[in-house]
Image (cartoon, rainbow, N blue to C red; front, side, top):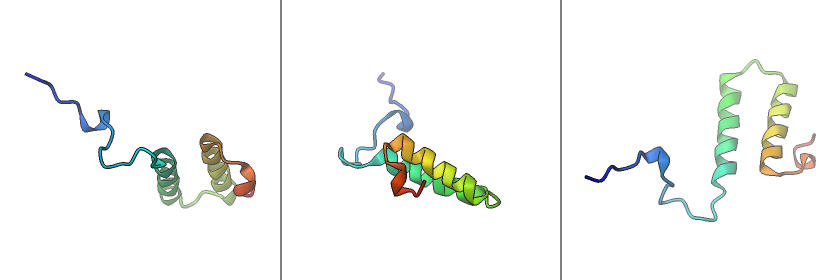
Length: 65
């Protein structure tokens, strides 16, 4: 009997190969964080944006940092 993998172990077959899945996921997580931490300072939000940009290899000049 073949054991089927969990869905989180498999790539989404509907996501195109060239899709920026990781960047979309990180940005979605950052937006969720902003809703869950409404009292965060502007500095904390900018720091988070800069950290996400760093992970994505985006220059800080595009963030304003």
